[in-house]
Image 1 (cartoon, rainbow, N blue to C red):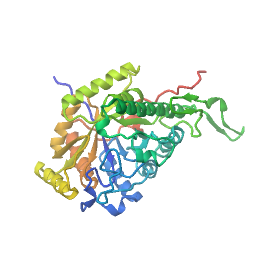
Image 2 (cartoon, rainbow, N blue to C red):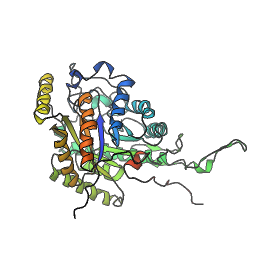
Image 3 (cartoon, rainbow, N blue to C red):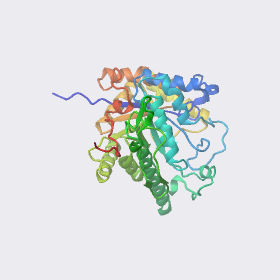
Image 4 (cartoon, helix red, strand yellow):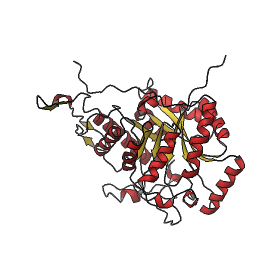
Length: 402
């Protein structure tokens, strides 16, 4: 008798009006509301309606660009955005179960600030916070801060010795960054706050710890000013396309987003991450590997393809992505997700091509299809993001045994 299929985890990546650059021109797009709290509240409420594990919120330290390396000067695409961590803090109290995972660029921000912000988000959401850690090699973004200069870098430079050196440095820095953030989250023991009015003792100073982190790029004394988050450790995630970022996922993350274009690639990527996990001494820990897909979902494959072509015509060029682009029906997407899941992926982060069209298609058509197949939850089974992902609340590394 065959075993029942493994349940899939499902997240959505939210970015402005959607991932297609012409998405803002669709009748459902609400371009005049992209900078309002109500717009983001509606998206996350819709995602929770579909019982999704979490949403990620894109961010950056420079204007959006069609070029991966530099500004493009275009005026026909969405430019300008709100801060992802602040959006997350605004929308978290409006939801009850879904995880909220803003993007943070580690290259130019401070671990102390981000640890405090994400710990605060975990309190605001009562245990549903995470963070997506990103790096930036863009010279224009470095110029906003004036603290470092970066060499010119284009995607074509990736395979060169200089390109590899830069990428390795940025990802080593990101690994140090996550380590400092995680230590800061642990720098207060769970019971450090006494809050005893009668004795006048609010805090047990012995249960606050210096983290004394010394890395190649910064040193952080600690302790944090924010007590240990409700989850102990909020979820850390990262997008990865090659060996160096796969290593970051394996060493430092709870969830990695990867971009395989077929089951064979998915299997190879998962094997590489598992090998890196073992090398990092994390072989027995759960690290989820989610496949990223851009999705155009319609009642027929022809309608989805036609919508993609119409948007491409508006944009003046065919849309390309680091991730596989899927255009078809919810049932066809469910087939693909199950096929990729059998290759070792434990979940998926779907990028709606047009947020106002494809997010409801995910929650109201794809999710019921997956439920019918017995591979997706019919109700939320936990109150925290760690719980939804099947991750235990970790012990505090600094807690002193009695």
